[in-house]
Image (cartoon, rainbow, N blue to C red; front, side, top):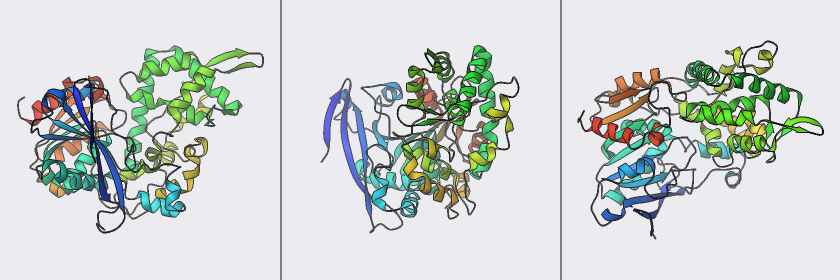
Length: 433
C-alpha cells in the first residue's frame, strides 16, 4: 500500500518493493526496498518522465529533503523523482550491528553482504522500473558511489536508461583498491596543505591534539576510543565545500582547562563522536573497499596497507619533528572496528569480506565502448574522494559521454551548486551546449 502526503511544493509517496536478495536466484530469498517518490504539487496529476536518484556512499540512504530543496527543486521542474534507499540503507532492509546477527555468524553475514554491491543495486532498479514506468526507460542521476552504480547500470542494463547523469562518480574500470588508494593519499596531502595554508594556526592545534591522544587514553561519551589515527580521519571533511572551515572550528575549541589540567573539551568530544561514528551508516565501513573488488585479488584492508607507503601520515613520527600532522579521509581501516561501538560486533565480518577472492566484474568495457545512452558527467578537478585522472580515463572509455571538468565545486557540488550543476549536465546530455 502506497501512502501519499505533502510538503511545501511537493507531493511525496512512500513506495515499497520486494526483490530477490540474489538476482541470480529469483525464486530464492527476498528483501524489502523502500523509495520515496517526489513530484511537484502543481504537476502531481501529470504523466511525467521518471528520474531515479542513486545516493553516494556506499551505505547511505537517499536524501531526506524537506520540500523542494537543493537539486531536487530543479529536477521537479520536469521529472517525477524516485529517491531510492539502496539495499541495506535507510528503510531498505538495513544492514547494521543490530540486524546482521539475524543472518547468523560472521561468515553468513559476509556471504550476505556480497549481494550489496553496485551490480545488485542495478538489478534492483531494473526490478522496480517496470512497476513505475510501465517499462519505459528512465533518467538515472548518480552522485559519487551512485555514479559508480550508474556506470554499472550502463554496463549491465543500458536498455533501462533514457539518460544518465553522473556527479563526482566516474570510477576506474580496472583499478584495484591498492591503485585507488595510492592515488588517494597524495590528494589527501594536498587537501591538508591547502587547509593549513588557509588556517596556519591549525598546524600547532592539530599537533597539540595528536600529542594529547598519543599520551592519553580518550574514550568519547558514546564509547568511541579516540586514537590519533581516528583524529586524523576527521580529514574526511576536507573533501566538501565547507569542510576546511568546519575542521578549523572544531580544532579551535579542542581543549578545556580543568582542575586536573588540560583535557579535550566536552564540545570537541561531542562534535568528534558525531563525525566519527558509523552508527547511522555501518554498511559504508563494511563494504567500502568491496566496491573496488572485481577479480580474484582480495582488497585485504587496502587503505591500511597502502598508508604504510606514505610515512608522512604517521603522526607519532611527525611529532618528533616540527612538521604538520596530516589528516586522512575516505578510507576504512581495521582499527575502526575496535574504536567504534557501532562496528565492534562486525569486525570479523569485515575481515572476511576483506579476504574474499571471488568478486565479479562490475563494469563491461566493451559494452561501454559501444554505449548509445546519452551520458554527461561532472568531474571535479580537485575531488578528494574520486581521482579525477581515473574519472577522465573512464570518460574517454564510455562512448558519447560528455564530461564537464570543473574546479568550481568540491565533491558535494550537486548539493552546493544546485541548481546550476544539474542545469549544466542536463544541457550537456541534451547537446544544448
